[in-house]
Image (tube, rainbow, N blue to C red):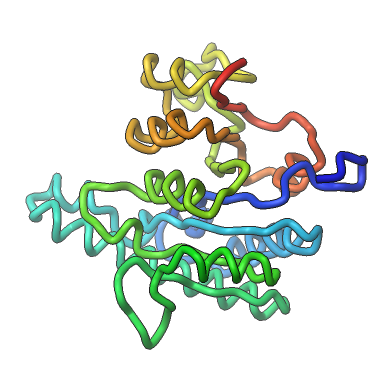
Length: 244
């Protein structure tokens, strides 16, 4: 792709959002104001001509691991979590389409009345036509997180990078909200992140990115314009790559 200052650094990206990102200050459910801000960020990316795919978690509605820890069967709890991601995906689709951005939701669990089934070649064709594609219902299997879904789908659609939006401005050696002296990493290798058990993604997702040399940027979604800064080639958050 043209590397001129006006040209985005990446042509096709996958944006990973947590379910909590949609909850806003309430911490649960879907906050209309927060949803609107996220949709505007996604629209700005789309308007640059960047092909955008999105994976959204479901933790603002139901988290499978939490359900299992409360005594539910893990597989049943995870399926409930997958249904929560469908709700979030439809909310983001609605917000984007109100802004004039054509969007398709593809679900790993058959749900024909509200979403397309996940078909890799069809997803790529949607992206090529300038539509935003939202991958819902995780991988369709219990015991896998939406982090793993993001890594899997990004590799399947040949995305150039995974942008993981979080509540902090990168990867630290400890939780900066609890440890004021925590050190932020500007760059890391996948291997270092895995061996040091840093909270980049879960180990399955991180291993998948490492095996396929897929870079990850962990950044703060709360800072408006961060995704655009990344696309302009500015250093934002923490870059996780195969080599430093």
